[in-house]
Length: 293
Picture 1 (cartoon, rainbow, N blue to C red):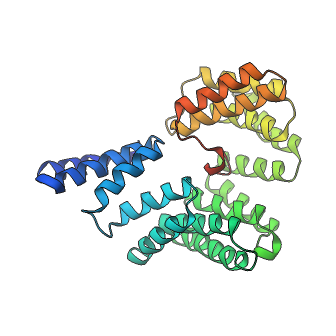
Picture 2: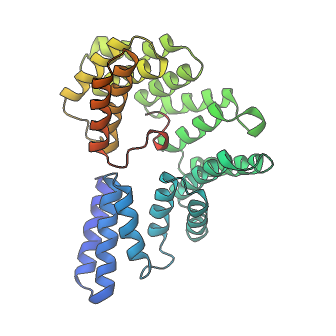
């Protein structure tokens, strides 16, 4: 639970305690729904937030979280409808624009060919608006990096602009910059350049959990140096998790470990690791997690 989420949660609980009947139930459902969302239990969060919605009509927080959950379950139509309403209500909220960009991007993946360019333009415009509103937020830079690195040039993708976003991330945070450069190297099929970003860190601090995980990620996505990647991820699991780690962080470690065991021909160990990922986050879905993860 983030600090901001914790403050909001307890404020809502205090407010809910002063209410009566159905309104109090809606407030409780909303708080519980936020807790489930933060824990990565998205199916349960959706049920609770929908239960609260009837007594919180046009609530931006409900629209935002249900819109993000709709994205998780591949419902681009619901996500766009909810997030467009949220943006209309709060046009200065950067996270709403970024989430709406995700919704347009999801819609573009399955849209007819003639609709793809328009949805891609909307996706990029939403990401750019989010970054303009809150330029110091790395997550919005990651959205732009992902778009420019993966979208076809005809849809607006531009690998040079992806590198520019990697440089912006490095200015904001050295670790984010390393992960961004490694991500681009992996996309460009240069795994050794990706490994090099974290080998430097691990020589100085062998138990850096972020560098260990990212080394394992490079081994998984680059399909090389798998045994070293397994050792890095297993060591990562032995260490205390970073303060910012959540359920999806731990699930990702298990998932990538499972991938690596499969790549080296150990199906039983692969299955056990993948099962551990699902136990950690029941709604685990790698495709929906952030590009840098």
